[in-house]
Image 1 (cartoon, helix red, strand yellow):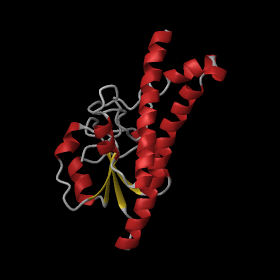
Image 2 (cartoon, one colour):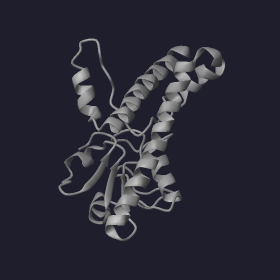
Image 3 (spheres, helix red, strand yellow):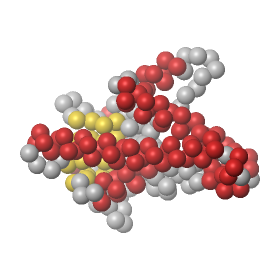
Length: 199
């Protein structure tokens, strides 16, 4: 049992490092994916890619089992969990700020296209999905959100829109999950916030 928890905690810690780097790079106006590409030329370095958080039934949950059993000995594991959860909160704040700036330019409420709701690319699994959490929270704040999840036909609480609808109507495209159909989109002249490296 501990082996499986260790595997998922290891991945969570490594993703947290990438997510933390993404925050530093945003502050310094550096392309985090280019930074990671260059750093990974080192033969003993393999930095993972950042995202909008960490989801799924395993990686987002399993580290807490180790931490709950040994809270005084797991500051790194606990910090990684906080970093990855915090990345989702940061994304929400960033989208709100970008929407506000767009509203000033447009003279009306900005329409936000949230692309991807699953917890990882090319699946329909929403368990512990940071993308779903972000999209839901943006709706709760009162933003006009067009949610798009190409791997689902419907959702019990969110109205889903096609890729075509989002492209036609959204003022800001927020890429939360790197689904394959998103990689072939024509984004010329579009305002994009890419959290998953599809552009």
